[in-house]
Image 1: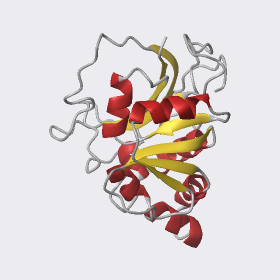
Image 2 (image 1 turned 60 degrees about the vertical axis):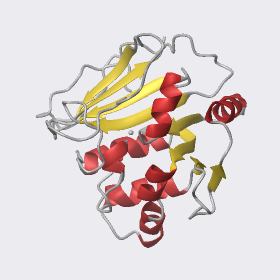
Image 3 (image 1 turned 180 degrees about the vertical axis):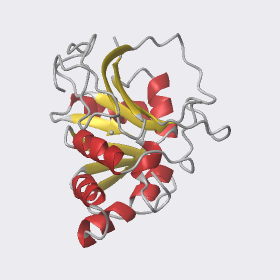
Image 4 (image 1 turned 30 degrees about the vertical axis):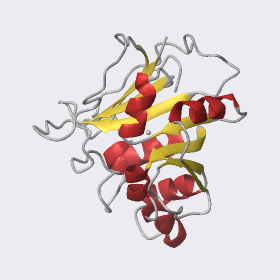
Length: 227
């Protein structure tokens, strides 16, 4: 998500049997390696963590990657979910910026479509300092993160998408993230916050690659399931 030029590009996101395409070809396609969500309870909602990273693992929102094709990628992801989960900082990067774009339709076609999709989805924000929500679709939660996510997973609905760094890091530590969507940019930042800095996992987390996609920009989208 680029401060306010395009916040989604900072922190966010198949055709079965199709071969992986090269950047020179007109259309990108997914290489689907598996369609089975290992270990996931089919009666519970899936928790998806999506984020953009540089080649050296930087997830700092001031080191943006991608362009309209990445926005289109995340618009498709938003259509798979019906709840967004953020901490205060990421929420304030996204709102009111994207709802205003959705209202005014003042940017590129890809930005406008992303904004409409984003604005239509309900959001949960974990914060003890945020006084009020900036949009009608947002609920502020001040209770325990683990308990609330477990409760939300048991509700009926589509998948839950979590964004940012702090809240997802805590959920990864708790073992509550089912799916990971990374977009890796062809950039070496050399500085900035790294994903999972300061996080202590109880054990090594081995993920299963199920989809990949190459963009013309050189960005690569990777989708992993937790076995």
